[in-house]
Image (spheres, rainbow, N blue to C red):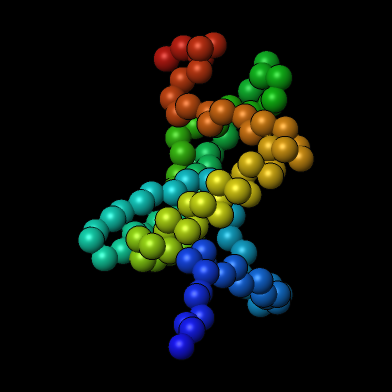
Length: 117
């Protein structure tokens, strides 16, 4: 009696998903928490609380302190988080191949040209 051998490689499922009903949220800040059962990512948007108009500034405004606006949170299993990590890595590689390297993350705090008052 012969047995059918199944491939050990996982099957990739390709599906088309209608994205018209998905809410879209802008975020530029994420905070993660982990426990043995899940990984949570809390997304927020950080922006200047107010701006000071400075006529001598080339941009015309100078940001003051930042505020953080909560946007949404996502909870997932560690297994799904690992899969998401791989998908993000592939997407970033593809992005950089098509559009060039992504710039480094700006560092918080004072830049080299700014001085504390």
